[in-house]
Length: 155
Image (cartoon, rainbow, N blue to C red; front, side, top):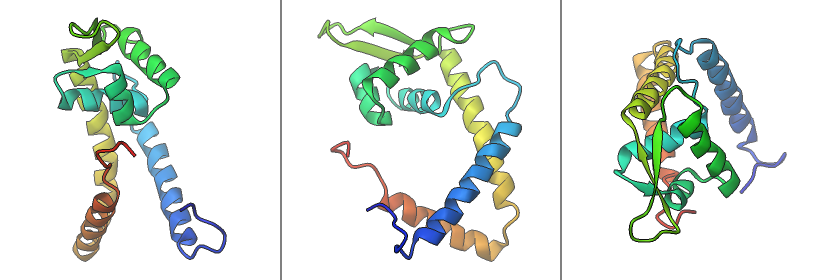
């Protein structure tokens, strides 16, 4: 259900969106000097590849929910945009029509660096809250996460 002007949750959704924009801007300014200036989509791809030994292009595309053309650009960027490839591509040995993707050691470092920078921004926000507010926030975040877990059907 998309929010409408008559939706009573819209003011809260707008407030959350405004907070998210501020966090994005702060994270941009706080980015560490790094050789890896990953996009969010590139990070999501590397993050999934860290969880799995190997994924096909199609499997990764479903995991991060992007269009085929976007997936092609993400893979190309992760292969060529940096000094060393952040992932490797190889033809699947069982089905020559598929491409297998694996994260490289450099890709792991890039993903970890990106993750740490994002976490530092979030930690700075959380440190401004009282212990009581932190308890409430933790409960709400867990509830939101649990209510929005991706289904196995890929929906």
